[in-house]
Amino acid sequence: MSGILGTHDLTGGVIQTIYTCDTDQFTVANVSICNRHNYDIKISMALTDTANTFDSESMYIEYETILKPKAVLERSAISIPTTKHITVMSTHNNVSAVAWGIRAGDTITVDAIPDAVDVTGPVWSTGSVIELPFNAPGTINLLATDPSYVEYSLVSGSLPAGVTLYSDGRISGQTNAAGAYPLTLAATDQSGNATNLVTQLNIGAVATQGLSLYFDTTNPASWTSGSDPVDLVTGTKTATLVNVSNVHATRDGITCLEFNDTGNMQVAHNMKVPRTYEIWVYHDQSDPAAINWESYFDDNSTESVLFGKQGNTNIVSVYTSSGGASVVSGQVWQQFVYTIDNTTQNYSGRVFKNGQQVATYSDLNRSLVFGNSTLYIGGDLGQGESMDGGVAIARCYDRALTNDEILQNYGIDKVKFNL
Picture 1 (cartoon, rainbow, N blue to C red):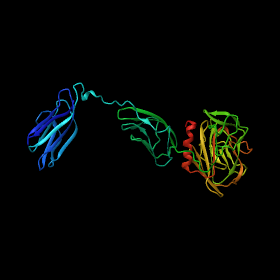
Picture 2: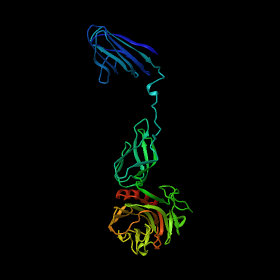
Picture 3: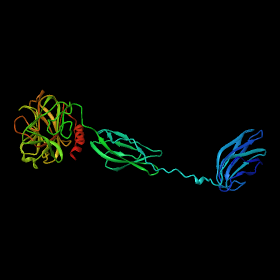
Picture 4: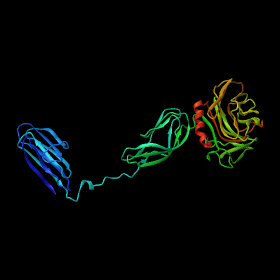
């Protein structure tokens, strides 16, 4: 039913109910109160439990509201529950009050309208790979959309030291732990519905500035079984394998070039100073000290710089400048790097294992090869100082990498070797 629900000519100072909602019904009402005087009056209006009274349970809609002369106060869409009253009081006589609206039948109640149930979890927009810089402040803002507020959490995996996941979806911090971190993240809405995302957090990337040569036997773009390795910098420069297995040999499950105390990998290269040589090697001997010289890089003459394992020791050496006692390990993948830091004799530089500096040299009194020449990897120029084991990654740079860049390269690559 709809229409006029009640009309009253109010008596000043008297609390009067102008409409009562019947049992098993509810009403949506509008109320108009008209001041017929030429002066201000005050109006109070409330939903009450008891007719013709304001009590402690009254829900005031207006309280001593001033109504100007000849003015009308209107309030609309007042929802009146079962048995509640619209009760009004004016400070003066000759004030009109009218209630009109819609009254529902006894088969419809407010409680019969069910609340909507949220059963759908947030929808992720963040991708399967996310990235933060190496050793610099950075922030990622995760995104999963939902009608309600979303909280984020880590289900599995671990974040590197210095990086934090916040409940509002920020992954933020600074770390020098370069590498790839598999993560499962959850986005949960206010109803408790959760949606998971499988992603990978990458910290940093392999240094590319000055990269002049790059072979990687774990990458099919660089090497496939039965072929000669291809330089990933140009995609065309091919190395020549001399007495080296070109089948897919493995060490600890890692695809590699296999050296059996013979041969080398040769590639045309433009030698420059400063420079950096980087290599991942696996020594087949359990005790490297039992092995005589094993060359990692040879710069192509008896007066060149030869970098590798020194004599019957487990020390790495840049020709006669040795250092890093006991750093060479047997039957495990390891990264070795050496840098030439200056441009003139006597040359200085640094030696690294697995991203950490293990030796320095300040007087390498050798003649370096400059310009276009041949670089020997995993062996030397005819001196029989070849590797006994595997080589997987070899890089050359036309500059001296910083300590942080060397550590960053190690962190990115070590995932390939399950380290």
